[in-house]
Image 1 (cartoon, rainbow, N blue to C red):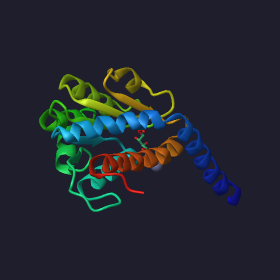
Image 2: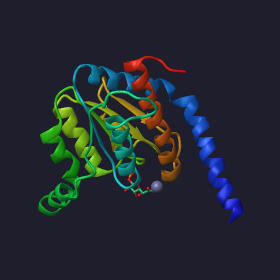
Image 3: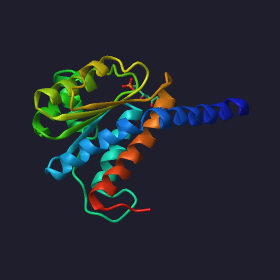
Image 4: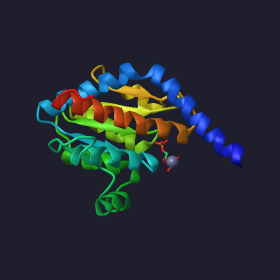
Length: 195
Ligand SMILES: O=C(CO)[C@@H](O)[C@H](O)[C@H](O)[C@H](O)COP(=O)(O)O
Ligand SMILES: [Zn+2]
C-alpha cells in the first residue's frame, strides 16, 4: 500500500510537469478572456459534477472573497450550490438541465462560462455550453482525456484547457492548479503585478 500511495504522488507530479509544458498558452488565453469580461462589467459562471462541482465552487469563492491578496470582490456564481434549484430542475425536467436552466436566467452576453469535466462528456455541462453559445457568452472549458463532446463545442473566441491525462483523479488535481493560475492571472492583471 505504501508503494501505491507513493505512485499516486509520482503520477500527480508527472501529470503536472506535462501540463506545465503543454498548457501555459491556453491558460493565458483563458485568463485574458476572463479579465476582458470582468473589465467590461460581466461575470463568471461555473459548473461541473462531483469533484468538478467542488472545483467550480473553489474558483467562485476565490473570486467573491479573495485569492492571495486584499482586493475588491469579483463577480462569480457557482451553478452547483442551490439544492432547492438543483433538486427541482432534476425532479421536474432532467438532471441534464440543472446548469443550462440556471444559465438561461443568470447568463448575460459577454459573461464567461467556466465549465469543468474531466471526460468532456457530462451531459449537463454540455447543455450549459450550448446555452452559453446561444446567449453569446464566452466559454473556458477545463477537460482531460480526449476532450469528449465538449471539445467540439468551443467557438473561435473560447478556449479549452485539456489536461494531458486519462485519469479522472489526476486531471482533477491539475484542474486545481489551473484554477489557482487563473486567479493569479486575474489578480495581477486587474490589480498590478506582485512578486
Ligand atoms: O471526484 C471524482 C473522482 O475523482 C468524482 O466525483 C467525479 O467528479 C464524478 O464521477 C463526475 O461525475 C465525473 O464527471 P466528469 O469529470 O466526467 O464530467
Ligand atoms: Zn475526486
